[in-house]
Length: 193
Image (cartoon, rainbow, N blue to C red; front, side, top):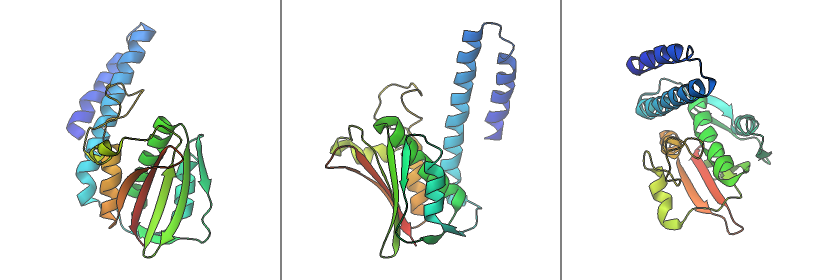
């Protein structure tokens, strides 16, 4: 990762001297896109080797803080406080990916936290078009996107769901997608409490 990020940082420094504002902005955006994709790939590669220690975390507070980063997201306070042993940096990344997907493709994100038996579930519901059932499981494959274009303005690198699921599974859980009967998509991140 360092071997790739250093030349990208150097290239970005050189691009700043380009006089044409439009060209410079396009070049900077391309470099930023490469750095983001590289960060996603490195996160995925490191998941099995995370040095982050498990910590006792209020899951509702964590989910609420991430939902607060997105103006189009709402958060429903859980009925009871749910505390679990998790790796908070990784769990934040998974939730941020799922909420970002909901806002990007479904315009809104309604976030809620529930406890079901020995599992904690964070649900993110959107009001978008949903996803054809036959495509859902394939969306967890690396570099798979519902948007066929490669334009980051219309979609990411195709690693967000892959990373979210890997993080959930590292917490003895999973991420599932389901179409809502009232329309939209529901992403459910669950993990053992």
